[in-house]
Amino acid sequence: MCVSEQNNQRLLKHILLFALPLSLVLLLISGCANSLNQQNYLACKLKLEADRKKARAGQAYSYKSQSFEECRAPAVYRTAED
Image (cartoon, rainbow, N blue to C red; front, side, top):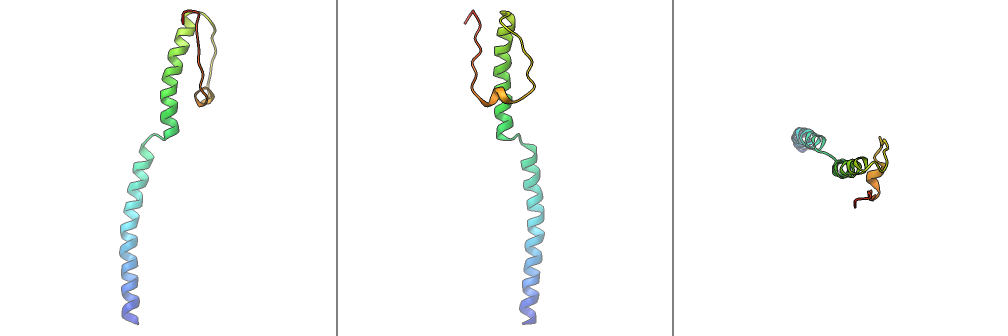
């Protein structure tokens, strides 16, 4: 019984020693990547800024936006030239 208990403890120790570095590596990998929402926002932001430049060039309107709201819903900005 004592030998079996020692083997179980040794096995548990090896599993924990393996799991700790593995979990740290996975945490570091996931922490370095952009989230899906952030990637979508960055792609949307580029398209939105292109539309804003066209609208500003045509002096159709101007506005300031500091939120993600415009990138969460589809929006189409048109100028008189479109």
